[in-house]
Image 1: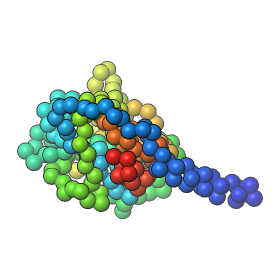
Image 2 (image 1 turned 60 degrees about the vertical axis):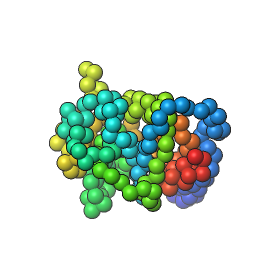
Image 3 (image 1 turned 90 degrees about the vertical axis):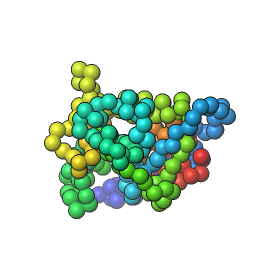
Image 4 (image 1 turned 180 degrees about the horizontal axis):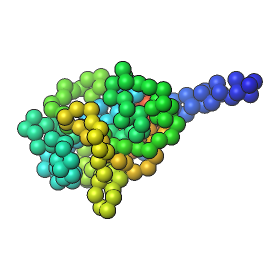
Length: 222
């Protein structure tokens, strides 16, 4: 018990130190000096106290890259649709906690330890920006393509087809899909968002497990 009482605070301290360093050390370390010609695209980073999403515009390129969304019931063809929102999370927590009022011990435990991963896709209309929960960035065509490729590669497939999670959705505009890999709190939703943003050509912190550290690093390094 004494070892536990000493080890647990030490572990928390080490994690806090790692998160702090991960926020202030940029990845990549040096900004790219290579210019990118062509028309830029605006993407958004949406955040709440524990989770971040990437929003891409509803346009010809995104619709062509993700044709299965409309086929799976995501209303990307709605005239009011402006943004397709992608987020990655732990299967149990994501599927069983649509609101904070639905929070239960077991999904929380799975979210903090190890679980299968799923992707959540939503469609929204116009968003007010900038705001405390919305950051916007302009990226070039090559970065936009890399971002779409990274998102597409995150979907699990079966016989060449993406795999929707049956009978679970938060509303009429969203859908869950099986994702590649496993989910842990140390490499969770926000580190996935950061990886996508780096693919797009943006700089993030070295390790961003929390939305606050990710949004701070985005502000500092871009």
